[in-house]
Length: 522
Image (cartoon, rainbow, N blue to C red; front, side, top):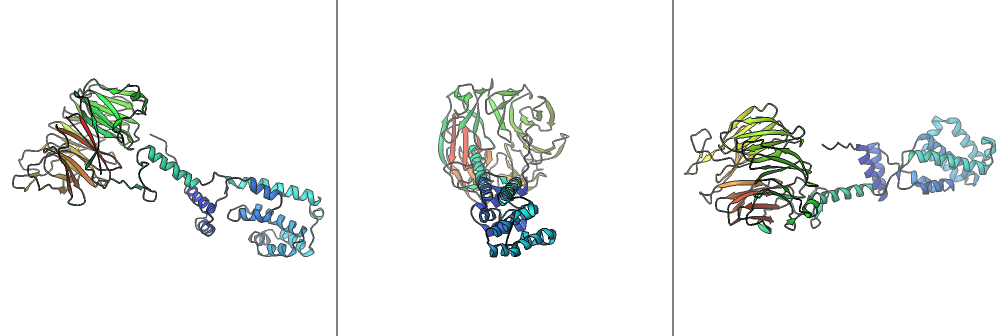
């Protein structure tokens, strides 16, 4: 896990203060400093200020430090020197005005009364001879005093690059572009953090079609959490990383450019990517798991025959330190990436485990099986907390309770909502929203086609749309917030195998036994 970087709230305020100062929002700058009690003593370069001090351009000096919070002793020294030099220049009215009205000198009058009295005496006599007070001639006095002020002010001013706030925002936007969250063609709202191409738009239009070899087809696919890559696992054992904008292999990855592909010895059944998008895990038909570094395609961990059957589903733990898998052998298991061993087993399903999930806290595991049941487990003890089945529709369109003696449909897809409710797809013509106690919260019905059966599903990044493959060879898109139901007919000429949705863009992928992967946009 990457180390956490702490940023002080005062530093954020200083960035804002710098922005206000550079854009001459002086009133706003002073108000923010007063309210926050944070000052900005920063300059892009101190050279001009030091030159002004050395040449006695005190009006420029005062303008530069006007919004800074300098030490009391330094301010006393600066204003005292200004009075001395004004009297020497016979600027008597100005020296008296500064003596009576400047805040630093008013503070001096109460805290260093003798020093203030000396300034009053100098102004009153209208003459200043440093020999009387400092035992040196005027030229030496100016030079030494100005050097002393320069040295002290250098210690209290921070040198910062210009426009740091805009620079940091620019770097953040570049990083999001690199991660695939923002594309060059999109309009980005920096306040809301959203792009114009948000995922609340239904994806119905085929943008790209990737054709696989005749004897091969994609068996699984996944987007990396950062949205940068689309990855497929195929029936011939190959794992490929795609540029989904062009529909071609991503040849920016050297290992793919040099034809050093990630691969298994048999059909790849499942894929998962770590939360930081750096590590890929793949499960195959023979119960093996491989762990890869996406940046160089190197296999960094092998788990051989960790199941007595195909690894149908796989996911990383929230901390990306372990893998959770489901298999044809009716079990779910946790495998430690550091130890390279299986560390927990979850038994109880009477058929294949088709879906596995961690909740957001990581203390619960949810599994869905071909036996028609969903089980919730304690991830630490591997104890089953509850078991339930989705409701079923009878032929007369009435709900039958889950404890009735009905033929249960296989659980094919499970997805959490942001408030930890569960979208369930189970071969019926509806998709269910349930809580982890098995209570039905909502169902998305499809009353137009009573014979329709929805096999696998995926959910858009913002949860606005559920896409399901139907037994009519179509993709059905259901709005989760309205009654909208859109259909993409004849998605594949063969069996539709799966669907995945981009985490932050309106971009859907379907793949099937016809050796095609299709990319849909809004």
